[in-house]
Image (cartoon, rainbow, N blue to C red; front, side, top):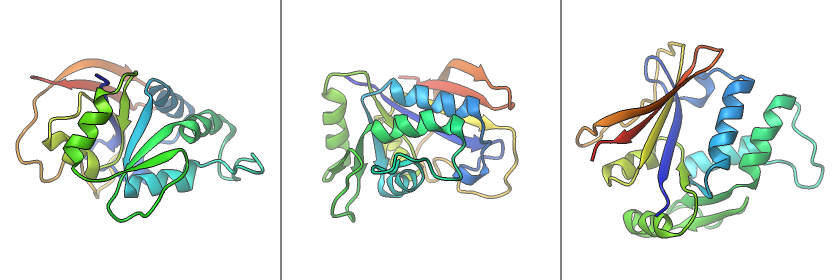
Length: 186
C-alpha cells in the first residue's frame, strides 16, 4: 500500500497562499526531495493549473523562464518529470505527464494507494481537506514560514471533526522556516 503524503507551506498565522512563503534554495531543494520520494503527485484542478503554469519547462527550447533562478531548476525538473493525477470534474483533458481522476474520490484514491510503489504526494488546499475527511492522508508536513501574512486562505477550514496527529520529525532551515511531519493517531 502506497502512503499518501501531504505537504504545504504555511505562514505562522495560518495563511497558505503560495505567494506568501519564503523563496530560497533550501526550501526548493527540500520540496524536490519530497517529490523524488514518491511515484506520483495528486492535485486538484486549481493546484494543477497553478503548478503547470509556474513549473512546466518549455519542451522545445529547454530554456528556463527569466524569473526562475538557477537554483530553482532542480525543483522545476523534478516536478516537470513527475507523474501527476488530477482530480477534476471540469477539465476535459490534461497533459504534463498527467491523468484525470473522476468519479468517487475515496474509491479512486484508495485504488491509487493500493498500487505498488513508494507513495503519493498531494498538495493544495481543497483536495487535501476532502482526503483528510476520508481519512486517506498518511502523513502531513507543514512547512511553517516565519512570516505573518494577515490574510488567508487557511488550511482545513470546515473540517468536520478534529484529527489528532503525532510529530514524527522536524527540520529547521536557515531562513527560519521549520518543516514538521506528522502522522495521524489511529
